[in-house]
Image (cartoon, rainbow, N blue to C red; front, side, top):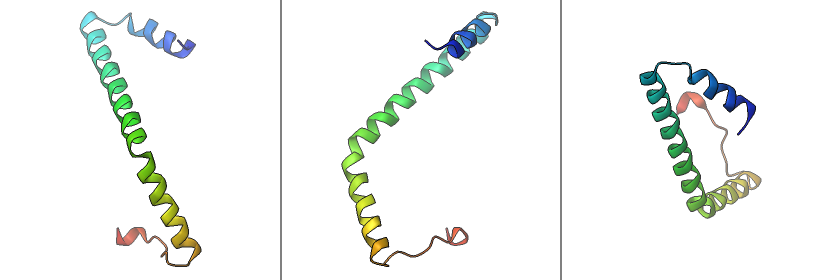
Length: 72
């Protein structure tokens, strides 16, 4: 565990029990979301790599258009 996380837990331990439970639930949810995100990226890595290769090929062949944020 990092020093920063230890410091955060030490500070959190001084909160009222109800606030500690709320903070713990938020941390656990964040960790679960991060794990799902990482799993999703691993599952789609091949497709993302193929899309990136196609985008690079289009750019090199001058088939890509500049992005206009006003048209999004």
